[in-house]
Length: 176
Image (tube, rainbow, N blue to C red):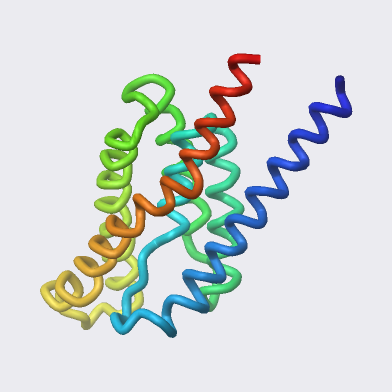
């Protein structure tokens, strides 16, 4: 029994590690070369919200912290608040999915909308600390609005890849 539990946790950890490693590499290496816009969608945010919808809040929070450290290690020049931000998004989504809204696609879009609004605030904070001379209207038009739009457009794809298979697996486990 204990071996089966440890094996299940090991496979789940491996699955999430590979998923988030693939998403981080896609977001930081592949998409900036393919997308003509200087802003890429936040795939990590979409995946963390999807894990929060399909799993519990602890798993989503741990995935958020690990993905935040990974995105900082690969995509930025130093350590920022990304691990804390993604952990909070995953944890809050897991709690709300368990207590407030159902675990379905319209609820996922509501969570993504709220997460994208907070992401815009986080990005604006980063812009103001990094480039204080950047005017707000330029930041909204060229960075915040495209990031919001691209992330919301990419979110259904991540829901299909992450949350839908997890939800089917969880329903199957509940039947057994």
